[in-house]
Amino acid sequence: MKTVVIVGSQWGDEGKGKITDYLAQDADVVVRSQGGNNAGHTITIDGEKFALRSIPSGIFNPNIQNIMANGMVIDPKQMLEELDGLVARGVKNFKLAISNRAHIVLPYHRDLDGAYESERGNRKIGTTKRGIGPTYADKANRIGIRIADLIDPVLFKEALENTLPVKNMELKMLGLKTYTVDDIYNEYIEYGKRIKKYVCDTSVLLNDEIEAGKKVLFEGAQGVMLCIDHGTYPYVTSSSPTASSVPLNTGIAPRYIDTVLGICKAYNTRVGEGPFPTEIEGDLATYIRERGHEYGTVTKRPRRVGYLDAVALNHARRVSGVNYLSLMLFDVLSGLKTLKICYAYELDGKQINYVPATISELERVKPVYVELPGFDEDITKVTSFDELPENAKAYIRKVEELTKTKVAMFSVGPDRKQTIQLVDLFNASSK
Ligand code: IMP
Image (cartoon, rainbow, N blue to C red; front, side, top):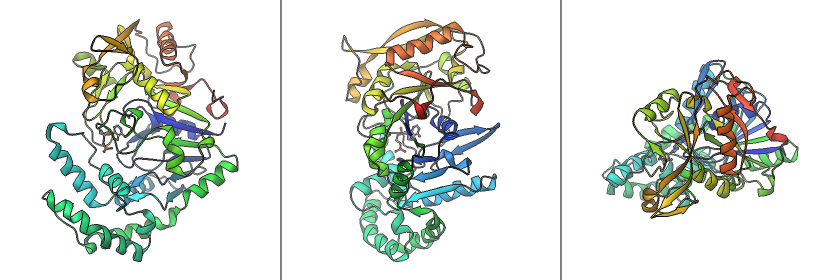
């Protein structure tokens, strides 16, 4: 077992960056396969905090080959700012490869993202306004511009000449400012020059690495509930954060995926709009939000907070083939009298154990909970499962029972050292 896919099993922000960073200590390659700078991965190394958006979390380790694969949408301006910021803080000698097939986010994508949100009024999705949706829409519409175009002056100019008339019509219709070819070309061609040295066919590189027996970690962004196909549509992102999407988004065979690690908080959060069956409000929500620092990495928005939802986790297990779970921010629950886990939904008087397809149904469901006694002990210094208080152990066992999935890791604080690994994932059975 040499490849591990990390999948957000809730609504994003589960702590994937931390686990990627932790497992990256054992990995040779770290790959970002979808999304863009809508993601925000916070990593704490020796007390120092780093917030990554589009760059893979293996960037801190000079031995790791980092790959930004074809399924990503890359904002060249933001990505270079992010890279410059890391270099300024002493991150150097990194290995980074960027797919020539990845699509690029241009200024009009960001403008359109904002405008479409305003147009939706009270049906707004609550996007990160990073232009992600409009960039994926152009890709599907076959008017997107790719990294391979950006790094070639002739191709880039041609692509802008072909695309801008259509985009300008759209911008005009929404009352937004239009762009000339030169407006974009003169600025972005410079980004292309800087990015060029990292660009290659990352599918070839990745296949070579896998065939050479290297350990590869696929770093998920967002979460299964935000999947364009399997999430709470339309309150979703515009790509698929499932493990199933990894082969397509990176150019490898499905048989190369060995283990899928689902990352979930010991509770639940969501940013942006859309139904959230186990949402809680009031003092309890504030307690969890403050202890868990539940504010968006990218937008700083306070996150909505809820109880752990095993119906959603089972959905993630089904559509993404999750073999193991990593339970994050477990320490945040300390001090709660009662711990609740939702194991079913009640929809119009009937108990169901799946996530309904429509928003109106999902808004009507009532969570059905199992209740467990809480724990008061500070668990931030725990280094093994055995050191956990009995009630905390029982919580983990209940999560395993309700999700039919083994908890392979749990986390009791932001630092790398506060991660307890119970299964060697690169050598784990995928059954
Ligand atoms: P978009 O990806 O910017 O189009 O936003 C669509 C939805 O996905 C919004 O509800 C965002 O808040 C959510 N979203 C996108 N990326 C992330 C993420 O990395 N973590 C959590 N939510 C996200």
